[in-house]
Image 1: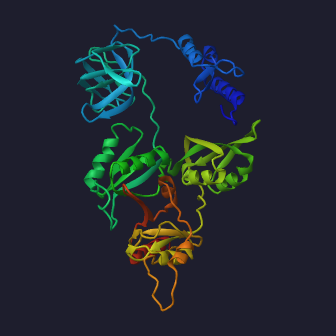
Image 2: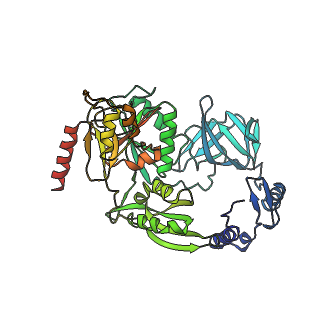
Image 3: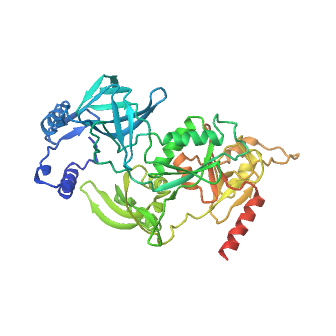
Length: 478
């Protein structure tokens, strides 16, 4: 139901995928249906629009085999997902492979690490539409949610106490990107959020581990700092935004790749990046990605004038790419990436030119001060915004940072002037989303997150401290 739909090409790609993954000939026999989720119909003929979703339901009944597990056999259930309820505690979700789950039964949880523990089933729920319905028992083939087993993880097996037998575990992808979460050290700390202490931050991050199994949280030598690793920028930015909406106030560092030392060499994660866009944007994308160590592996044109590109690129090269992609393609493009392997770290990612404008004093930004700042570059704040020393208020094209007083008022004279004329000369401010802000900050900068604002700032707020840090870095290089 879209003008750029590639129906025939996608069918061929699916066939190629099955040819690559199939282990027997039966897996190459499958029905093909064409659907419009927007209009709510499915059909087996792409030239004949459907009227409802009946063809899809019929195909499911014909092609998907019924459960084969024996309800009378020893219990086996693989935990496929986790949830948490403030009243019920941890909730394990999965399908009963064989046997029967009964309320108050004692079961054994077989962990991925080979350890086992005994628990009592307190509640059993099955799904009816979008609702959970509590039942006294569930048999083989049922998709259930159970409470009672604590500390269970995705990939664990819930088995009978009499004959515990583990199922093959689910592989959970390793984190590829990490960030530092810390207690806010801003002069405005505590003014906009309800949860600001290290204890609040510690409890919230480790609570997230109950349901977010791809996340890793490590403590540091400082009780105010935590290293959080996830499956990419989006994974971590969702956590940041969720905590912000929960009235947390904290600060985070720029995302960086999770590296490993293999055979004495530093290895970094690489990803396969797939892009589909119009031909006119290929040149700009290729130039940008080449500076980020990307290797073009495939390039194909389709009948609709779209180009399909495939790159191999280090994860650190993808950090900051999303904003550039949206600006360049103007919404006329689709991209996706997936982890492929760890490979030796080589080369440097081309940094974006320019520096930042840093507030030199604490106060309230005024039109006259921002007008002076816009003579140097772009500004990120409006008149009336509260600022503090070390807060980033804009950017410029040259190397190095510029300290500027955006709170400076215009000196009064005997000459009349129109403040309206001054206000008209102010350019529009640059408003960043969370993802854009995380991509913008550099290694010596932080993003302050509050329920009401995102603020860019320097790690060292004092100009004197920043000068000392630069000297220390210069000595270390020498």
